[in-house]
Length: 209
Image (cartoon, rainbow, N blue to C red):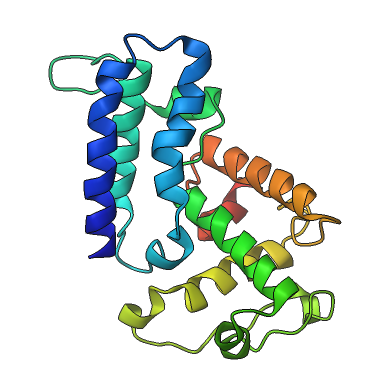
């Protein structure tokens, strides 16, 4: 239901981009994308964007690509084949919605570790102050049913644990000395994986090494 509502809001914004592209200079298109589209994708995505066996983000991803086609004027390859958006993602360092979820989830967990709030999440995940985590790992609740695995408390720690236990592959993201450094390393890593075709699926990241 949340994803459906998000899709409706995105469609309303995307429909405006087609006309805007005709008057916007190229230098402003990335700014407009961040203001109109990316701001909606990032809002609370660590909550509504969690997924396990069902790709609940695919409808949003299709809308994200449609927004890029409208804004950057990507032409049809043929009558029935849409133009490719991958070059635009790469050229403008734009993360797909899958990697926006990974990015925001890691930052939310980091904030949770630093502030200890909200307390109920801190307790559910059995967190300890940052720097005292054993092997930089966070407790993953033992949820066996796929339906219950599609939530922040299950998915976010799994991503954090993968990144923490594969420091050399993941640019020592978890061990970054500051928040700005963590953000920079995390985005660079996710964009690198994205360019190699490992879009948002942390299980496939190892195969790129």
